[in-house]
Image (tube, rainbow, N blue to C red; front, side, top):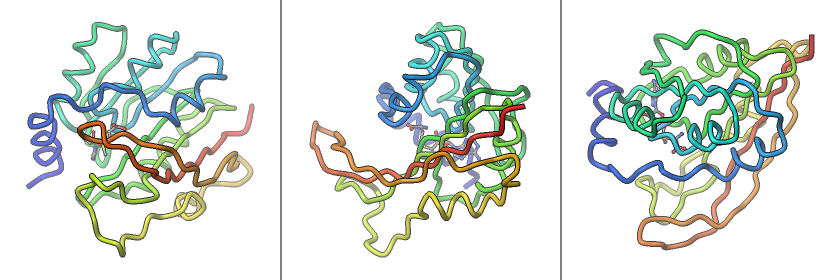
Length: 199
Ligand SMILES: C[S@@+](CC[C@H](N)C(=O)[O-])C[C@H]1O[C@@H](n2cnc3c(N)ncnc32)[C@H](O)[C@@H]1O
């Protein structure tokens, strides 16, 4: 099964996915002056919609056509594009690029995608990468030996020029998450912000 087939099947099967904005995106973007934003692996568009409603000029991309259609269906001025980010990357430069749980069980050179993203930042722009740092009780993956790369490890993998890109945040906050059926649990997020040097 290709990556597109895999994710397309998920979004067709889970029509209710993706309505809410992710807490770390809200926390990081709330104090920022709206500008241009790119959402990598946007899913059904909870984050893109949240950003657009706050005045950001949003480009949202996903490999699943159904997910991209959902984003378009909100009727907001969001540029929603289908890309396999392993193959193609949206054009433009951005003040904020967000990759929220941009994690896939299929082979993907994610570091290369995130490296490309860093180079698509405006001077002074931020790349926000939020990954799962623990296993929620409702997760499909219950393997206790799963290694979640730390934000520091993710930053090292990108191997960006330190004269151009600085790690502005690398931590592992905990929060209460709500899963299917309203069940709650404490989860850990791995949070990395890389800031491009101002011009
Ligand atoms: C775990 S989901 C997270 C979705 C969304 N960001 C959220 O927080 O709900 C990962 C997303 O990455 C997308 N994705 C996976 N591989 C991709 C690829 N190669 N190119 C573009 N999007 C991809 C999937 O379709 C899916 O929407």
